[in-house]
Image (cartoon, rainbow, N blue to C red):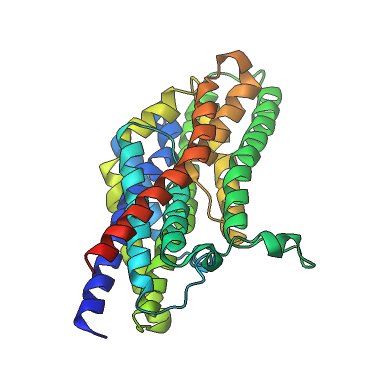
Length: 344
């Protein structure tokens, strides 16, 4: 490995961890938004719980999501791939920071996929991106590549909405004669569910960073087997821990207060629905947006309870985010790659 290759490798890994930090700011904040807004915990307690559980989620996560993310790039694992990965990560980080600043419920996963697509496109062309269309329409009907990721990103909030709507409707029926004192127990149960949700979020999201770093190491002809995976996961978990501790307050405010007036039972059902969606997605190797899943579940519980009181404008913002995040981060990544090529 030459000195120049080593320098680029270090920069790629550093930027990948910056992306993880912004992911902690962006998506992890949505994990505790309802937990805080319903009064089950104060912000400090909730953030610390999410950070600790998220760290262990990253450390013990599998590799299915990481394989999906790294699999959309079909450029051979050679030194030239490092600059592509660097441009992709910068594109994702820039978009994450912009949307976090304005409290826009965007997706870190959308941003990362857009960054990869934009960088690979200008570096080698569309043939080096695993789109997945031919595999889906072929004899095996396999869901792979960009198609799999986009399908998961679109369907997961819808699934979260449906699950939350049904659970909230059932809760309204079962608890119709319950005393208000039951809220005390509902709040206590949420501590367990919030921890599990943070764990599930990190197990899914941290793998995105792991996939990129593992691809970068392979491009630099460096691999250290399972030992390498463990330290990558550990560092990703530690960085996400810090990002969560810093807190994504604008996004917490949007989700916790801007969609629906959250009460303890709403938060409980939102957490149940979100956690179930994330566990399923991680098992299937599908990278999803925790922020969008949580927003979907909050809308679901609100829709089941008081349909007219839900701020459906947030749904419009998510649809807008679906439309612009991938192209925007792809454009930034493409511009970064051109700059890297100029200074080469």
